[in-house]
Length: 231
Ligand code: CDP
Image (tube, rainbow, N blue to C red; front, top):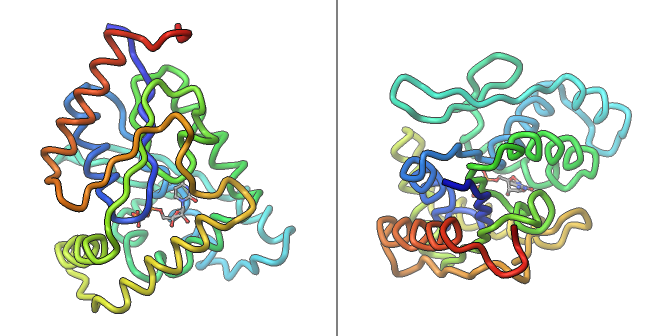
């Protein structure tokens, strides 16, 4: 069967990763969490105390970063930074609090986008993030843009963090999501926005299963029946 690229963009905690992961599993595709790459870079920059306003320091630190994904014994995608498993560390609030300014840097984006495009060369990939449909894979056969109301997103993120053993109060999460939404969608480099040909999906009142079913249905229709003008 012909393979496609599925790009899932949208705001934090709208269910992008959960949906992307499950859709990839059902289709036998590779799942790439592009946010994890920016989180890993942020982790490295914090460890090295990189001054974001110093281009030389940024370039040097960026040159030291190699991000990879490996499957755990349970079949989960885990993020490795320079050979070390940083999956747990990069999900912490400390990283969430610093990731958006790091991701707004042009040099960081250029380096990450290059790696992401390499990962999509063979197609058969589901990638989620902020600029996948607009910048990384503008030619993706299926593009989705997820939204959800702010309180739903904050509750979802709180539950997710709690499941990882992190108790964070709702106000802290609301503040972080709001700040990141603003930085991510107003930055000069690849701001978060819906691609013109992306399909919008409001996940506030639907379950993950419904979300996944809808995306798989759309994917299968694109795999079987390419859109006019597309190979
Ligand atoms: O999991 P959550 O939705 O909170 O965020 P994430 O997908 O892990 O992304 C973390 C941060 O990385 C975002 O707030 C963006 O600043 C940045 N990011 C980006 O700039 N471009 C992407 N393609 C993915 C993430």
